[in-house]
Image 1 (cartoon, rainbow, N blue to C red):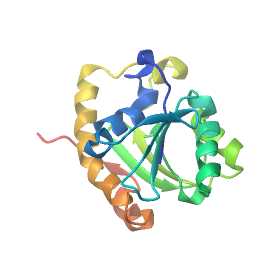
Image 2: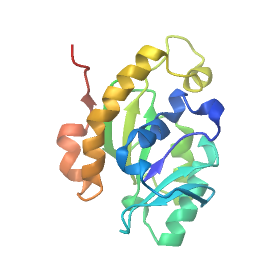
Image 3: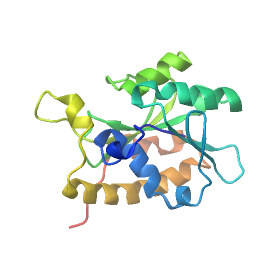
Length: 186
């Protein structure tokens, strides 16, 4: 599982780092032994053939880090789940998807450049599209407090899906999670 993001404390609250924020919110990742390997932060899950990676190469080169891990453990692109931010989905929407377009996402472009295919799973967290043309500035801006609170709830609701994906095939969850809008309780 590859969590896309940018390294460094100045990026930790950015919209582009929502995947790392999700990883950090999961109880199961808090107990893992993270170490530096494959040009990123890497952890093995439960002694099974499951690995978590936060590439340390910045977003636009994240495929290089993922490629190193995949070559070392002989992982095919079809066995990879990329957790990412998604500009084209509103905040509060989560989408499990197989393959498809890259939507201008530099992390996904890097994955395709390294693996030669777009055929990998994606768990996409909607961050919404800004009402202004500065996409770069938007994705590298922090979530405001109200959005952070909403994300905490989204992460809590998505944690069960993520845990299920550790032992079950993603196809089983497409009907429910193909594009799921998570609303906060009133």
